[in-house]
Image (spheres, rainbow, N blue to C red):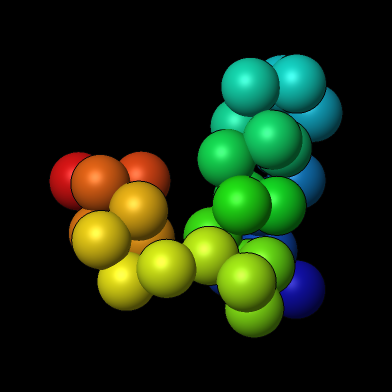
Length: 34
């Protein structure tokens, strides 16, 4: 699997968790992925 990335940084893991959370609103989602 050469296209798999593992992010061990706590801040990246936190932001990815927020992005994946179904309770994250669309405005917050857009701000996180900018």
